[in-house]
Amino acid sequence: MANRRRGEVPLALGGHRYTLCLTLGALADLEDALRAGDLAGLSQRLAAGRPRTADLIALLGAALRGGGHALTDEDVRRLPLAGDMDALVEALAEVLEAAFGAGAPANPPPPWGEERGA
Image 1 (cartoon, rainbow, N blue to C red):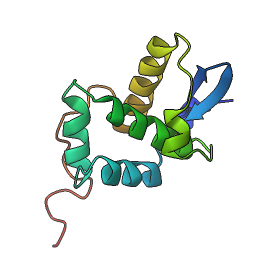
Image 2: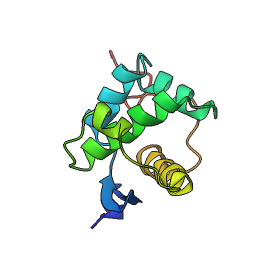
Image 3: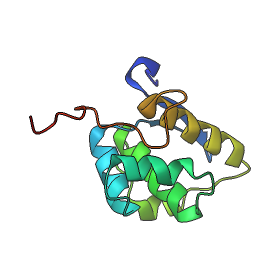
Image 4: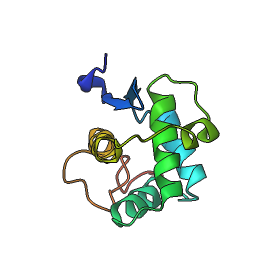
């Protein structure tokens, strides 16, 4: 069962139940998969509002692995939607909100502030 306090989001897809979570490792994998460069670039790309299907596969794969499922992106490509696209999009939005917070800016400031090297 998904623990919302830990940022976990449940998803029923193709008759199976999954847990989505964007851990630090999942976010790092997603940065690499989307060639976003860094967390700010990833946030900007996802906030653009026009994701490609490949973006959704990368996001879903990272969130599934962060939620404890050992699925490759190729496994994710083969998951049947079976009319569950609305549920998928809603769950992905929820997991992003859990990771970045409600109303997070498209270009969040670095968590270490401006004095990083100081």
